[in-house]
Image 1 (cartoon, rainbow, N blue to C red):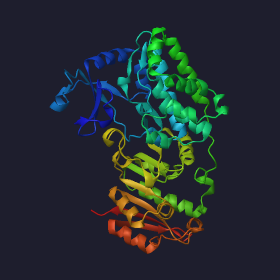
Image 2 (cartoon, rainbow, N blue to C red; image 1 turned 180 degrees about the horizontal axis):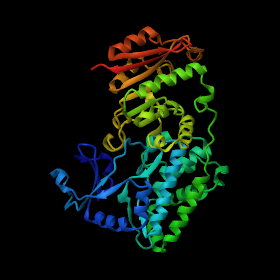
Image 3 (spheres, helix red, strand yellow; image 1 turned 45 degrees about the vertical axis):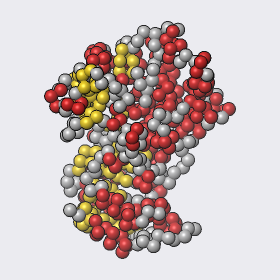
Image 4 (cartoon, rainbow, N blue to C red; image 1 turned 180 degrees about the vertical axis):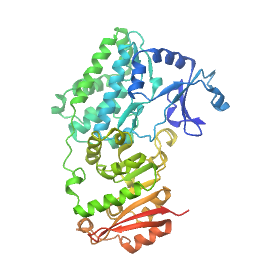
Length: 472
């Protein structure tokens, strides 16, 4: 058992992981006192029942703790919570616009419910949200505490930087928020957000107040700025003001819309190049593999709008759909929102490019884990992707096959031949340096690392499907 590297910020409530994946939170005497108060407030058990807050129980099982975790500083831990384990941890820089918006709304709803019961949420960071399939869930239960009289919401700045400003940039400016959040875990500062707003944007709902005023207050000299929280506390900041602010933020966020430019992949169901017969044959091949056994975790790489990820969910515990096209992934999330409940609980759509998946970042390079370290797939779907990786991004074919093999999973891979219309379109007006991209090299690279179990060539003759298992 060891501390989670990302939980160092809260010294009173450290998260640690058991050897079998159990998630514990160790509480100091102060944090245990807050937990006892918050857990008795009416909003908290309601949030647990609805699934809005991660399932949690007080166990006080100190017997399983190694000596190295038995104390915090100069005082021993006073309590132990056990949490439900989230199947696949994701981060805000991997979510789509609609996912970030829904996560923000959940955070505000929990804040308002807590404040109405005399409690608060001391943090406002988007990293306190995870996903149970398509359902956002709040995981930092130690962030709930009793509301000190006269104090404002301490998490307001974090909320703006990791929720509101990224949503503003995407909705108002068409600027992708993912590089910003991936490049700075603290989020987008008020000053940076304000610099990107035009005169027209100043008149948009929420910009002048939550960006302009916020940036102005933070730019004041330290000698004249006693701190927003202390100033408001001295003025007697009541809980009604917190509720009004949260309601205002909720209305702003609910009205935010992002209209992306037309995307090939967001219209995939209508614009794909397959005949009806080939599309049906491809689906049947994937379905046969999916139903050949029960899969714990499936990754659908380059999953577009999630059509094949949805098939995988028929016989898997979890399907992670990864797509670099933000518009397509956002469409996937919104489309699957109408799927049956058992499917919605199993699919997690994430924005990510296979050739640039998120790496270890943050304090000591361990605070936020690399994508490939957060889960272990048993099956990987790699459909109509290899030509984009090799030709589009210049990755040597053999290196891509080796990377797939290193995942240690069975693979369904679709090879698209050079004479396929899509490949011909990609090669147009570019120098052909991908001499390794051919059927013979693909076959040789695959056999080096995998055992081919089955294959099928589609009637077009330019695309083939292969089921391969890694060599022992």
